[in-house]
Image (cartoon, rainbow over all chains, first blue to last red; front, side, top):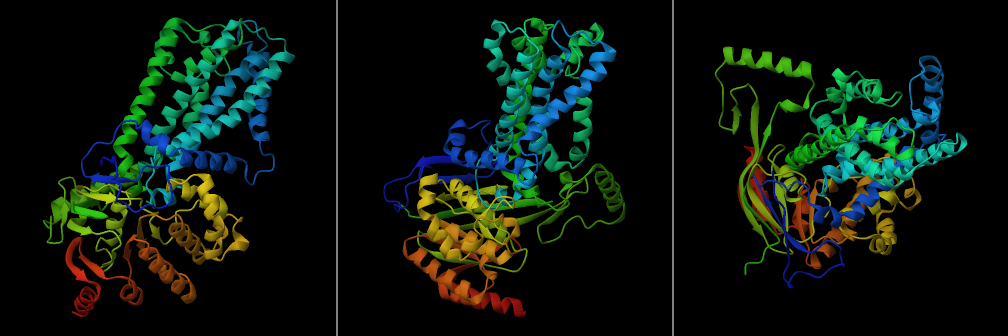
Length: 297
Length: 265
């Protein structure tokens, strides 16, 4: 662990091209603890973040035929299948809204979440070329995955809005809190993404487990059904899954008839998500300075 | 006030040779079994080279240890040594790619991207986009990079391919572009790890000319090289590493001679 201390340099330094980063003495010390979250440094490197996000978006659609249509196709096709299966046959209680709207509104945050986690899982390995050549805050890589996924998220939200208009879904004042639920979603996705990014670098089992775990996650998260279906004896364990809270609050904000989220469930989910992000940042800051040592393994 | 561009103080970097935590579960079990049998079988727990055997069968090695030096601004220093002497690790620590296990270093000024084989490019992005990404990492904004862009491309002589993804570039083209970016973004300190070994003779000569210009502007250069022509032509000073230790530091021609003598023995 090394601490980077940045001081403003004396005027006798050679004056070269004007830079955004302050001309500085960088002090590299063994054993010094990296700060948990250095917002000042992240801001100084915002041009790098911008370049990484652009790249993230570009790669998502490069060499694909359907392009941005993937953001549409995935939730639409899944909604159709779910509507036929769960909506028709199982008659899952959804609290007054059309089942297709209900399922779609669960799929939007869920697809964003899996997208961010999947992209984050490879972000350190795929960028080993950069990691092993130059210093920049390594946290920018998983952050770029989270931010890059927002494009798809907004496309999906537009489709959801169109679907809600078509189905005549009534919206209430809860819509004002919709941005807050989006923030909640990004906190959970980013926290999980950072964890997976580092874990995958050290244990390649993670890459094998990830598709299976996200598939399992689909069933233990109220995407296709409401969490009111979950037996009471399982509720506390169920509510500890922060994505359950995210999806329920997402729906609460969108339609008045949604089954609702209890205050208890919301509090548990918010605490769980903050713990997820906090522990992820802690883990990342401990590993950050030596990520390049294992990247090419 | 003492002037220095780079000051290393008792730098050390320890690696675990088995890289225990990077492998899958079955290898962890295999390691456990092997570790047990090694403990039962032999007793060569350590040797003189700084290798040591931990109690759990995990071997570790000091790739660099106790290395201290000062480099003044504008100095051109060659880092010499056999493969595995710790040259690349030293440059990686100074470029903050990896952290030292012990000791420390102070680096004054902007450090360019570490130039080595297999440049820091993203294969899916075009050469143009990689120029902007590298520039951003060096702390330049888009406007500044745009102003330098034509000079970067024309120096690298890959105009025709600048909008192609870098994955289609040859290794020579990659290093041309990487070198061109590094010198045009005007870092105050440039670290080169054998990057000049590729590329044809005329481009290497061009690089050496560019580096001389670069040094004349007051920039500091630290280069790992086995190319004696480049060393004698560019460097006034050299550091010799052996098994992670610095065993010589002095005028480039003297250190180079001693390095050659050492190789003969």
